[in-house]
Length: 379
Image (cartoon, rainbow, N blue to C red; front, top):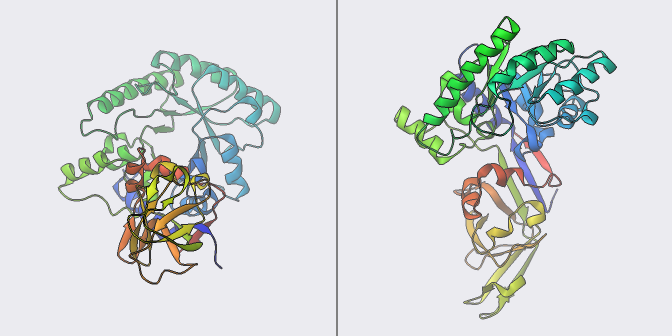
């Protein structure tokens, strides 16, 4: 079936990435696959069932995302990592754990407990230096007592690193780790025992620092086959004296040639006339644009792959259309496959390459691929 554009998700690459990460982890730690934000743009309907088969837990941002996983028929424990408002607390089962950063959320969870009889397990999130979600160490004891009064069980303690990806110097991350250990002592004292689930890792920590494993390891971008940053990959090389793990990108984004047209030397292309033909030029018009997630910033900068060759994007990327120069690629016809992200024959365009050209990071570039673009599970 010929489509205007689609995303291919490699089940095999996802499984291999998760297996490789698990092979690094401490033996007793649980592997948590983060599938928030439509599985980092990859398509949660396609990714989550594969991730659930190769990880121990799934993690999402919102209650709505947790409900969606249950609608998919997935029974794995779920960790909600983001803020949950009172009106969003419905149809959640006892295997859905909630990250709590304020007494207000505990109050809403207590109300849900009274209405439904379901006490959702609580993971307290402590502030260790990111200054985002999280409560001060000194507030943890009070939250444990508040949870007990509301017949809620605190089963976990969590935090998150501020600067473990974008640097080769990890002193601040180590300071955060020490703060987290102090927080763990506080919670143990308030509970009278250690919480069952202790977790602070992200992909970079999971790849580089075994001391952050604790009892759960959360991984996001790395399970999708991407290093969190070039610095993380270099840190691995400096530590291990070789290149990184064979992480394989899970996502390929493809389109087709929708039209071919000839432009005379001196004519301009697209809005703003931002590109001028310096020779007689053959253009391929593609049915994809910034509404689909292909950044407008990539106009006149990026490349796509057609018939195994890289072709430059010319003119501005439009809402639903973009143009590429195929003058030097013989035999291009309407309907030819175009690779926006991925590999074709010996040529490749990576998410990291496009992110660099558009002034962002691979996370954002992938997450912004529109959910309306069909996702197809392959191999």
